[in-house]
Amino acid sequence: MKIREMQPEDYPQVYALWRACPEMELNDTDDAEAGILRLLARNPDTCLVAEEEGRIAGVILVGCDGRRGYVYHAGVHPDFRRRGIGSALAEEALRRLREMGICKAGLLVFANNERGKEFWARQGFEERNDLAYRSCPLIPVKRVQ
Figure 1 (cartoon, rainbow, N blue to C red):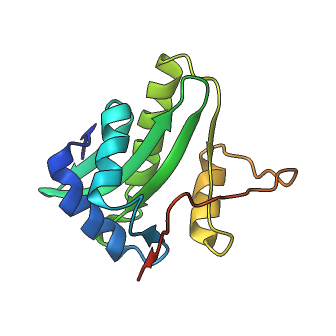
Figure 2: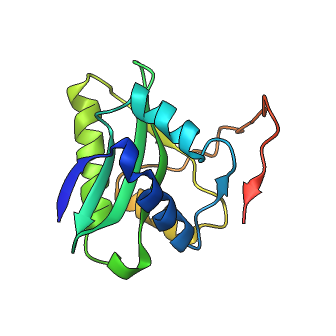
């Protein structure tokens, strides 16, 4: 397995990977190519892909605002799961945040995504029951089926 920084030309393979993951929820704005390319332009060092057998087997998109890091999307194609790819991607992205001087990272996991919650707990992310997440769409956003 090789971990490298995601490139704009990786988007079609990454999107196909996300679509193959039943627990992944996408929308037509943030997850469209233009939205992902904006994230890559701002965070070229922390958006990573894992290649195995000539394919993109996993991806993690991590951003940073200079104060905190945020995991936006992470996934491993079902054909490549249980090989440590997700853990390796998370470790590398978090290592890069630490090198940038970032002391804390956060993420959101859908309440019904048991696999995701278990994975992130193993990576050291603690559940916060003292917060109420709120979202305000600034433009209309549709979920992708």
